[in-house]
Image (cartoon, rainbow, N blue to C red; front, side):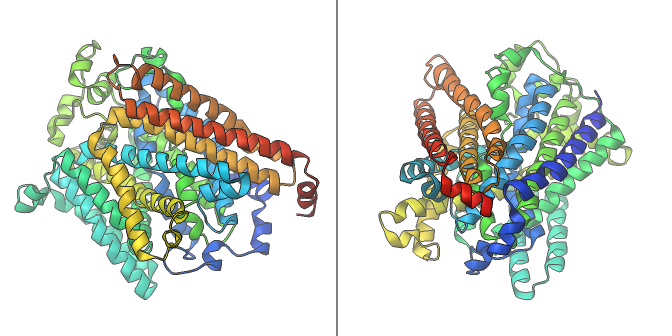
Length: 600
């Protein structure tokens, strides 16, 4: 298969889905136009200049897209390419349209109905205190694991890479400058242009600092980076949203979308062949990248890009406090998810365009690769041109950079720029991940404040600075510990199970809300269909990992803590869904709700 066929077909499917299914969700199911007439958005009702800030649709889209499109759509499809290109492609398209876009829209809607409160608070009000407590506890577990899993991906890309570290680090003061300038002048266009040009300049300045004192200072090992990332996240969570989080996400969204538009153009020019077969011998398990079978591992490995529980944190955290209008939910919630699916498909193209021997040489340790009976083809030449040894750089980030470099350098104009392309993509990937860490840590702060507020009331106030500092520091300490002490193999699988369990919880809340507000009860199926598949999948995946890996002393990933966390999260999910089913049965023929639906 040629890459153009895959890309054109996928984009057409997603555009049709947005136009038809997205409109159906917005008009018929959520009734956004009616909400527009009934009440203002939380950003207007509770405007405080810090967390609740009415923001234009496109800036909010940029923030939301940058926050949700983290490592998942980049790394997940690359790791799942072990099974061949077809399982990943099918799961991305079906999962994004039927599951992910619906999930993101209904979670955002549910949170905005409750003044932008977290999903735990929404669950408490809609399903009762038991479900609310279990949801909050599950969210705290999951966000901690998610932050560690996302951060883990970027470590090996920036390890002893001063060029990449400089390019990523300089985006922080640039974003703060853009935020201050926009706040003072209101000139978004001018701030955006200057900020984007400075970020691009950082990539080209990188080579000149490598052999300097600054380059030596930025040559960092994994453990040092594991400390720096949580420290950065602390400031991102504690500072006002307009100073760092929103402008950084907004600026990086230009790069994210721009890079993948360029990659699409590169695919059209080069039209690379998909060298990975539709299915590989590892679909039944035992692969060098993922040890499990194609199902359920395809659905827990490719999280963001198809459906992701992490989106529920953003959709009930920062974004509902920023939306200017209710109808913006369609473009920001439903639309951003489909754009992220395109990102994931392009990552899949970049991975599967590599020769299978090159792909497995990067994503397996050298010892394991020797047992596969494969040989590299283009990788030695690319390693020489880029200036780094690329073999055994597991985690997926390097594979994407190599795949994109492989495609672009096949164009005559760019054949001498391999090192620039590689470092640019590394910065691009790091920005994806760090913007998610920005929002994710802030959401973790909200969760800790919600929980702590039950014991010490001032902590619940989001405008109390000591409480903000304490909750931000605790959030960073929790996921920072997992990051510092873990590895990609132990953290990513745990992240996949916990992340998709969170998506199941989001769909449970969405189905509950739809039963109350939609004109027809059968509209619940928009959430129940993806929920049925995802809940079965995530529970089987959790059981498989606990039995075969976490509590199996003979397995390389043996980890009792991960096993305990998995069991606790699955139990919490079971309590929540049983509580929800009881609620649905009670409300199915509720005369008051029936009258409310008829009068709505």
